[in-house]
Image: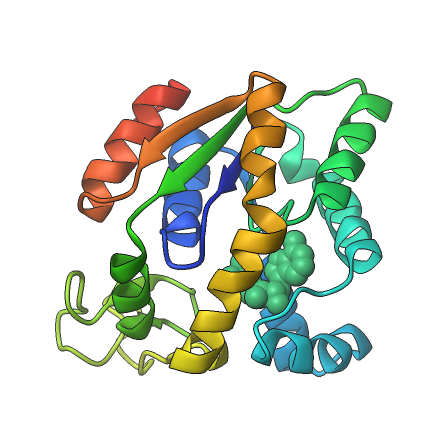
Length: 217
Ligand code: AMP
């Protein structure tokens, strides 16, 4: 199964994508995570993308399209994948359609995750992640056991993403409205959109999603 998770920053695409990929045996393709890795490793792509990401803007379509083309052709994506953070523009969505068509594959479902704006901003400012395994925490609603370190990697202090600052969050929400939200009607037009509320707890939302996609809860 090939699934796209669509929704504004902070709605839980990363967390749910990780759980779904694990629970359903699909590859997780998170373009934001791939870019953050490139930044951390200081690759030419990382150096180029760093400023754009810190400003809350989008990395160029050709770069992102190539990245997903390569990653989705890897063997672990053969049984299916969850795309988190891609497509983010109509150009990327068109490229994804053509890419899958040329492989005689198709996108099965696009999940539109939604939550009220004030909740998103609050979630983003309390969001932390393990620098090692990328497990997501929320200091208010889903804190780690000792309040500071990853439950699975007790040596790792949780970190805040560089682009989760208040100013950048506002910009990212604007960019979402302008460039990514139009994809909801794009996929609705294709009959692939399934809207899911992301307002409950992480586990509630996951249960709804997994059931909707027919995989293990
Ligand atoms: P995310 O982790 O999905 O919130 O992505 C973090 C940042 O990476 C975004 O704010 C963009 O700067 C960049 N990014 C991730 N995915 C894409 C994409 N598909 N197109 C353009 N930029 C992206």
